[in-house]
Length: 462
Image 1 (cartoon, helix red, strand yellow):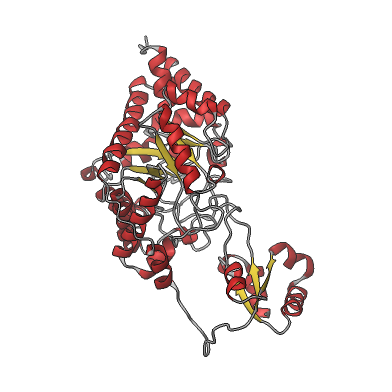
Image 2 (cartoon, helix red, strand yellow):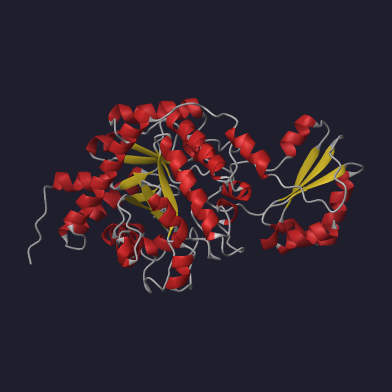
């Protein structure tokens, strides 16, 4: 059998077009600019690339000086996961806060303002929102990144977020299809397995994704999770049954009827790289129906881009990847780039600078056992600190210590970790904490306490 392929130059351009690589530095490296001239159509920016909004705008202008229609993607969920404000913390609460308020107009306004700020920095594709239903409270990677545990609530807020983000001219990328909420494993580290049957997936995980498609989401991100109900051997990112047979299939055939861009989660995550390798994983993903390969959270060098480019070209020549599938994927990337240019030109630009603060205030819940007395004197902030997951990263500060120290001079803080609890024992940890606090009231700051027995034990003892 003879495989007919187009010119090597066309194949190479298409292979580059389906990659969404990252890089290091706050200016574009020469290799990125050069590859943009050769067909690269998208880049991803991460916290390491962002110093402030002005610098990011200059960086994206530098990229567009080489290719005017380049897609510039970012992972900006608000709340825990922020790249735009990685140094100081997000001005916007995360999904759980918005789901707690349960006002879709507020969610839409928050997403619109976040999108407006991204657009002002030259970003036109946001790898958000998370449409995962938080059905497993022990989930180590989703948690507060989800709007909640009710599929209908998650669905209406996912749709509102998509509408708000895209009204600013920034394409939304709804993730992590077909749903990462019912996992107890982080796919950054290993391959999660979801045992739910297909009816459960239809009634729970897929509900928010259907809402996102109905709301017009321009992109969907696949998850590196194994769902035997769909495919017993390959994770969703590499599964034709999940991507072509479910996400793309018409609604009357039980699918979601999605016709936009399918983007993979980071291809270098161990759920893919440790089993398939990034080159083979990239080829399998495109063959399965993905249109764009996210890479760069961990591997951010030119050699990675060239390895993936060459793997795709080689797969076409060897008959492993149909050339029309690669061409279709590249065409979808370019189509989204065209949409962002027209949508950006037509987007409303009225700012809503208080949207994030308004949402955060409305999300606050006070649940005292007795009378609540506001702080009026210096406090001691005990930050019970679990290890941050990779999606959040360890660069972004969180907690209340800095703000309380500014409002109430004399406030001090210390971090308490699982390692310290194991090394000294809970009684000694609490005794040392009380001695450090002295006469000051103690503010205990916790997160995911239900997943960390050492933290719960320390709080009980305190």
